[in-house]
Length: 304
Image 1 (cartoon, rainbow, N blue to C red):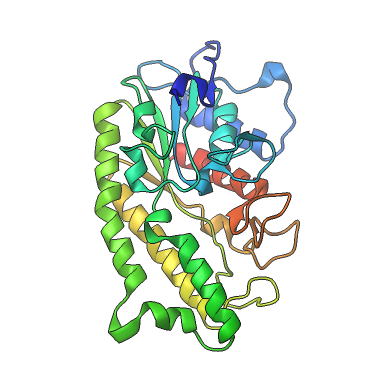
Image 2 (cartoon, rainbow, N blue to C red):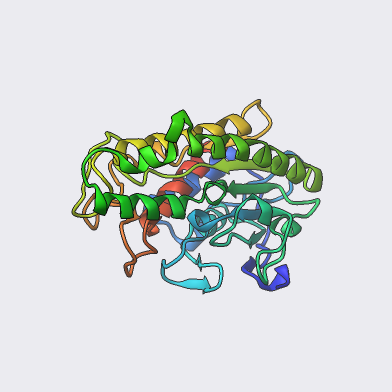
C-alpha cells in the first residue's frame, strides 16, 4: 500500500513565522475546546530553519485508534480522531502521514505487516516531527489480558495470572520488556538516520486498570490481585520507553499520568479506556477522549 495514498494530509499553506512554543500553546487550547475562528487558527510550528512541520506518525493500535469513528483504514484500525490526527490538525502540519497500524510491533517498523509496508518507509529526509507508540505487542499485551481474564474466571481471588507469569521465580513479562528495550533503541537510531532533522516523541501507554490497584471484576473480569500486578507491568513498560527516549536526544510523552482516574473500570463518560468492544472504541483501547488526552500531552511536551 503506497504511503502517498494512505492517510497522508495535503501540504498546508505557509503562514508567517512564529515560535514553536506559541504555536503549540494555541494548538493545545484548540484541543481543550477553546473556540476559535478559522482566521485565528494557529500557524504551523516551524523548525529553527523556518520550515513548517512535516509529521509522520508510527505505532500500534494505541496510536491508530481502532473502533473510534470515523475509521479511515479498517485494516489497520485507524481513526480520523486518533492522537496523531488531532496533533497534525492542531499544529497545522504542512504534511502528515499516519502509518500507525493495529497489531504492529517493533518488527513492523522495518518489515511489512501484511499488505502494509514497513512503517519507517514513510520517513523522509525533510521529516521534522515523528511520534512513535510501540512496544505493547512485543509483550503480547493482548495475550496477557486474555490469559488474565480466563484465569480470573477460574480463580477470582488472589493473583493467578501473576503466578502464571512468575513461575519458579521468573518474571516473564519483565523479561519481554527488557528484550524490547534494545529494539526500541534501534528504531530510534534508524529514525534519526532517515530523518536527521526530526524531533522524535516516544509516546507511552495510558492507564488501562486503576492506578491504585483496586479491582472492578464486574467490569474487567481479572482476579482481585491481578489488577495491581497488571498495573505494575504497564508502568514497567512505560519506564522502559522513557529510558530509551532519555539522554536529551528524544522525548518521552507521559500518557499514563493524565489518564489516572479514567481507566477501563470507570463508567461511560469518565473512562478513556473501553473495557470491551463498544461504539466508542475497541475493547481495552483508548476512546476518542483518551486520544485527545494523549494529543494534549504530546503538544505540551513540544513546549519543553
